[in-house]
Image 1: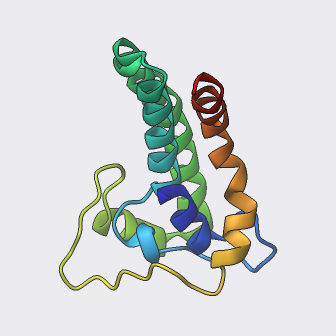
Image 2: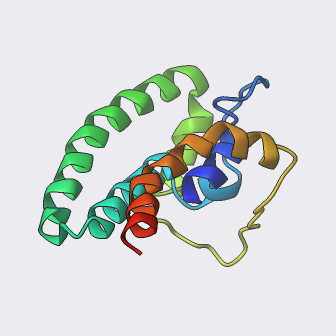
Length: 136
């Protein structure tokens, strides 16, 4: 759901004009899509019963997204300049900050299009659902 909410505001897979996104989850954390991916991976690890793999899963995401985020931030600084620099100073990279005055827009006009574009993320649950159906 975090990933879906982020996509709704980012418009990454939608054919709309792109701009520096600071609304929705981007008002709380700079990388909500990646944070959503980490939650999906951790959830899949836990649901699979491989609790001992949680540290390895976290390490994997930390290494991959550590490189990816640094690269993307340099690209965004180049593209948006001072506006992105200000955004970086106000919004944390990984641990969400929930300012009291922030407007939490949960659904906007891109919601349904975003659901369709992000539905593949829910496919990670399919093996677990099938397992439950078969073993009953």
